[in-house]
Image 1 (cartoon, helix red, strand yellow):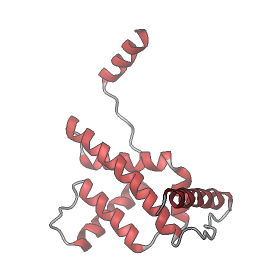
Image 2 (spheres, rainbow, N blue to C red):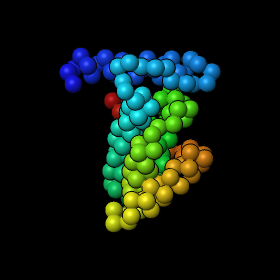
Image 3 (cartoon, rainbow, N blue to C red):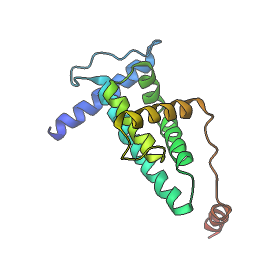
Image 4 (cartoon, one colour):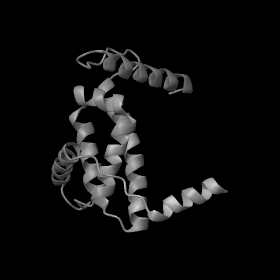
Length: 157
C-alpha cells in the first residue's frame, strides 16, 4: 500500500464515521476504498486502545497500581477521546474475530487470564470484563499530591 492509498483509506474511514454519526441510526455508509468498514474501524479502535492500555500498565507497574483499574481507566479514556468512533462501533458491530482479539487483549492486560489458558477461556473472561467495564461508572482519576505541587511550582517559575 502506498502512502497515497493509506491517506485515501484513512480519509474514507474518517468520512464514514462522520457520516454515520450524522444519521439517526448511526448506520455506516458504503465505502469503496475499504473492503470491511466495521473491521477497519475496530482495528483503528484496537490500535488506540492497546496504546493506552500499554501506557496504563507501565504507570501501574511504576506506581504499584491495580492492573484491572489501569485497564478499565484506559478503556474509558479511549472511549472519551474517541466518542464518534465508539458510537459508530456500538451501532455497527465488528466481526467476531475482531471482538475476540479485543477481549483477549483486555483479559491478559488486566491480569485476569494467563497466556497458558485456553483461547476460549481468555475470550470469555475478556468479554465478561468488557461488559463490566462498559456498565461500571467511569473511574475517577487519582492525582498524586506531588503532581499538584509540581504544577504550582512550574507555574511560578
